[in-house]
Length: 96
Image (cartoon, rainbow, N blue to C red; front, side, top):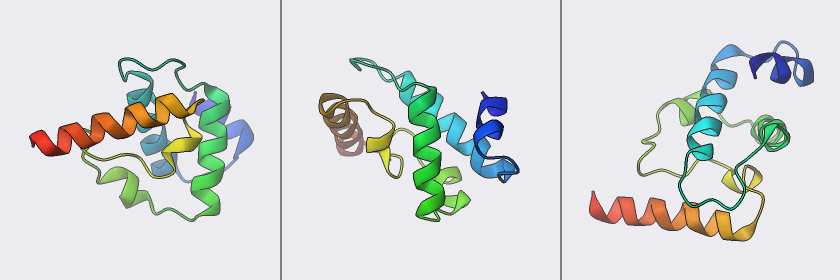
């Protein structure tokens, strides 16, 4: 997957790619998604992260159980999945 990202964004800093891939694969594991994010969503999401100049540390220093990734809507294919991810994060925060 890193090679695919490199084709679209040659020379992209390594930390951003590493953290983005971790989040991407974590989101793909969310139970109940109607459509898991594909490579296309990953590429689009990275483009948005770069456009918004999201710092690497925001991706790196996240609590994957409680936090929603920045610009998460770009990773998901439909509104139901966006709401599911948001609900799961909210429920996890309440329990914690």
